[in-house]
Length: 220
Image (cartoon, rainbow, N blue to C red):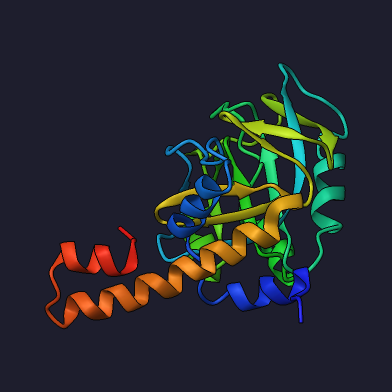
């Protein structure tokens, strides 16, 4: 029986890691799915995995009334398992995320947050255990600096296009993006690689040479 999208997501969740997913994306012909290495988890133990909900920011100068309306609407509309992704064009002066938004997103059982901008309130975010991946850390608020102008739209972080529903996978190694229409075969390949690596590691721990293990498993 063919697995549904929801079933393979749940099967992958306890095993998933960015490196085998990156290899699987390469195997399926997707070579520009790795986000800039400057984007890091605020807690190295965090794992990010789920479909994206997106927002795009525009730089501003001066005070703007109702500046938070669109980002509040996005956060309040997050569904269980979704990853909130806010694109700033890589502008570290725009810091859209902190403790209060993390608290709301965690209550909604969202899977985490990602930005190429900045985040703050790191100590509180680490304490609550909510996965936050950010391009910078800054105490600055978005007021006077940036405003969300589009919600649930296609954005770009680095060289990677991110559409609503694309699958975000992140850990301490980095963040990769699986195009939604190719998520099932990519995740199936990644899970196969994870299983193969486990068997290869067992052979290496038992004393097999790397050359022999590579010939047997074809993995590295």
